[in-house]
Length: 329
Image (cartoon, rainbow, N blue to C red; front, side, top):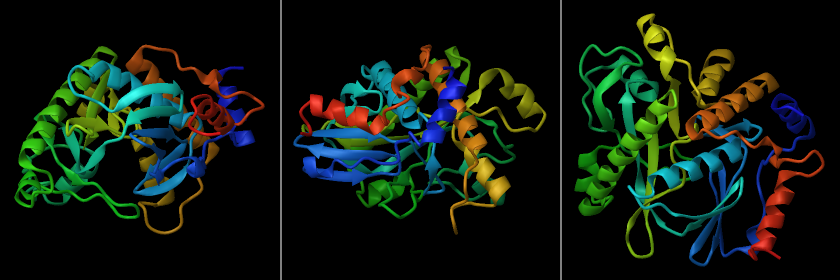
């Protein structure tokens, strides 16, 4: 069975990971937009589901999405572990990551190499208005590369609320993050983005912008947590077509979930308010293929789409793995 047939079968049988329910076996539980987090003593078991969020709403589920996110994150954590400490301990299943339990910092680090997305929309309205305390140069054009990457931090939203931009000065003056820790986080952000940009470029991609989350491990060390350089947390463009499309005033070829954000805005007039529209299977399949292509280009590895059998729901596979590891009975 080829990948296209496999995706259609998953949709037909609803072999999608909407959520997991192992709360009774763990000391703590937190459900993020995409990941289900279970706390076991000093460890966090993170299960990447197939949920798709956009505009801070859960929109739908996408075949293989959780697997792509988990395995992409595992790849990047391995590639950057000598640059920045990360929380990963083991990856026992395509959708599961066992990590060190860390205390998350109250800000997220967004770093941008190009003016696009929400930053462009804000700039287009008022080029003189700062974004997270950053003043962008005049006369920028949509999707233009910046002279150097800039960090535009945001608050880390509580469940049901939106991330909000915040300046470096505000973070430090209000001591939202202690100065020494924040400076370390800034340094790590630039290091990670530089490494990500280099690897993406070698594989024909542009890492446009990304979001990093950091925490403190039990020894107080600054640690990168959650995910890194996935098509959920980052924008990726195809490098070979960027220049001709930019010169022609057209949008780049994207390999991330901006594709579905654009579809929601243009086809459904949806930007987060009101009823969530139904997402066509054709859109789900197209986004799934973009995510898989991103994984294969970035890692240089073929995506393993045989992880889901034709007669067994993937949550059962995850449950069996957690039983094998002794986390549930």
